[in-house]
Amino acid sequence: MNKTGYKSGFVSIIGRPNVGKSTLLNHVIGQKIAIMSDKPQTTRNKIQGVYTTDQAQVIFIDTPGIHKPKHRLGDFMTKIAQQTLREVDLILFVINAEEGYGRGDQFIIDKLQGIKQPIFLVINKIDTIHPDELLPLIEFYRKKIEFQEVIPISALQGNNVTTLMEQITEYLEEGPQFYPEDQVTDHPERFIVGELIREKVLHLTREEIPHSIAVVIEQMQRREDRDVVFINATIVVERKSQKGIIIGKQGSMLKEVGKRARTDIENLLGSKVFLELFVKVQADWRNKASQLKEFGFNEDEY
Image (cartoon, rainbow, N blue to C red; front, side):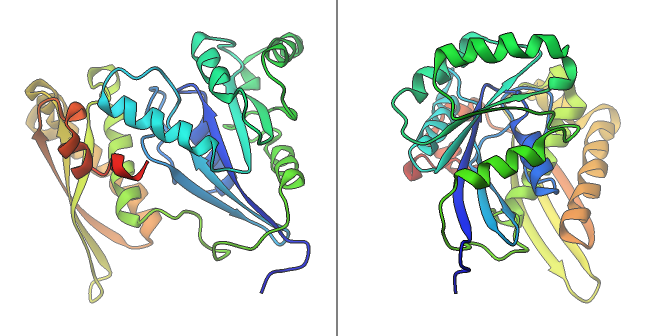
């Protein structure tokens, strides 16, 4: 039964790669559900985060950063991001205060023209600039497109995020509670586990490994008698040299990836985890439709 005056709706988080969309989502939800990396273009799927209070439920869609695609996987990610604009009740256009305006922003602004849903300009990373720089930035973007609200925040530190959530709730219409109050995402655990492993690879390999990696969870089984989850995962790369980097000298890099990923996975699942990792080369997989589908990027759904 719906509560009287209860509000709900879907909100898309959109912006150039690496402006802090995933950091914002994770801060709001209070739990790591979106991959966080200081490398651009880490989010690949529509990750829904569910924020529930006594008054409202906000379902967030953390889209891949809209960009001009360079390969088939890029086409897929851009298509997802653009599709969400037509599906949601409100759009958060997130920009990086420190970087300011870039050509990628104009590409997004062009996509937002004609959109009927309310659009908020969310200026992230305000802790990295002087307060005097904020007003000219706001005026510049306001000339580009009409925003219903402009909200400066620091997603990493949590500054003004509460105000952002209050404003979002104001704009939502009355509606049902779509998800149980204790559910924070609609993604299966296997997906999030794969993302956590991929995140650790990106963190540890830094600039040595581009975004030509995927993680496939081959097996995930809980042993109730021992309260242990056994996970078997394969890290897929495009070149043999990348495989060597991820494995590391005498397996040291792969061991560290597993150690860090296991900590996050245990926090997620609430039990001990036995994690076994393998590395496999699949040349040019980002341009092959069959392998994109195998790795969870199903173009038919968009």
